Image (cartoon, rainbow, N blue to C red; front, top):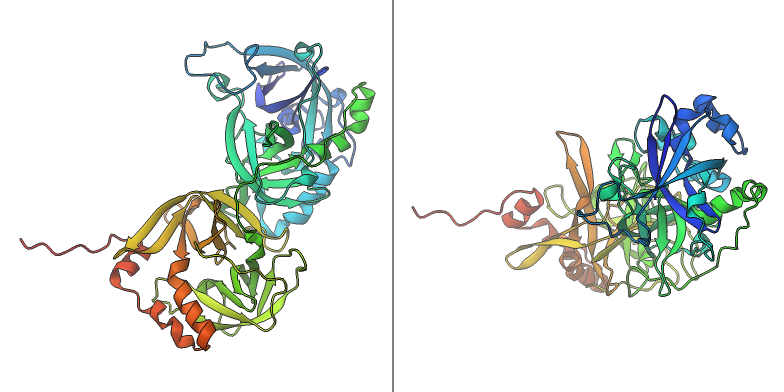
Length: 499
């Protein structure tokens, strides 16, 4: 649904919302939509732990909830839907409630030194309001015999699981077209108490804040989280992830407010049978954090003591530490390593091979083979590896041999060297080399990126493991002009004209 708030002289301001109950009618939305109407201004968001009651806002607010026509629960409105065909329900604010667990997770995962910001520059995008949510009582939604929306606890989520985000881009701007639109993605990362903070690569637009994120399951989708911010920025780089707050965490923070309103909240079910985003082996078992001096990136483990990463991740002579992602029988322990080979600066293949001083315990080698991309991009060590999903959008071949892969997976700073994995078979396809940057505009495009096919490095890796001779990698420095042109993003030279 869409929530619209207006005062006698200001508004309307709008965002998305989720209908949590029809007996009684309750809607949950992002609290920041009420920012322009706070009597104490933005300072009200800094109140520790206390809910904000209606008396904290300007009087005579009009709060409307926009819903699809009666009997339409899914986003099925077409272009021929009559203008104004949406239902409007008057509602009243019960309270604005801060989610403490989400706030703590935000502070730990997104340090101020890394210049994280969410949303835009408008008043409702004040970072202090990110963890605030609004409860609305909507009598027009009361339906005899109906109860709460099917829900699931975020504590059951795993990285890589599929998610479905539902929100209304641009809020009340054009709900006849945009109401309850859908976006599919995966759980990219998790943080906080019982996974209070969730990152997904489902693509959301401004105005979807307050919408829901659903966990698909064989017996129907279940609401698991609420969209807190549609855009994430790290410095000047658009990260391409959406920030979610666990519904269970919001309900825990809202228990006293809902209790005073006489609302009985049924318990959130535990684990449900979710629909996985991909098959095969767990790709998180292959990914490792690579720290070299002040720089860090990702790498893919090819053997218990052998790691493949990018040349630009490692520095000559700098101490090198490798931290494999934790897994069954394996803690997140850092291991020393040394670089045994890097391609030359003139080589189009940005590759480095690292040998570890100790073996990685419980290692299961990847199998060379829509795409899956685990790595330590954006968040680094803070929350472990992140996962994004996309499609293999292009395979660039020279003389019939693949030399570059392009994907739509979101790739961020720190993803370089991480594995690109088939979401169907779980097989290793390649390693991430870079995303795309427009140097003129200063813009980064995380969903257009380039990977080195594993078929390029697999033969020399196998030869090196058999002989221990680094001369096995010499061919990576002798790529032809067609390969170099592809990685310079130039047209491959064609045959000369005979005219």
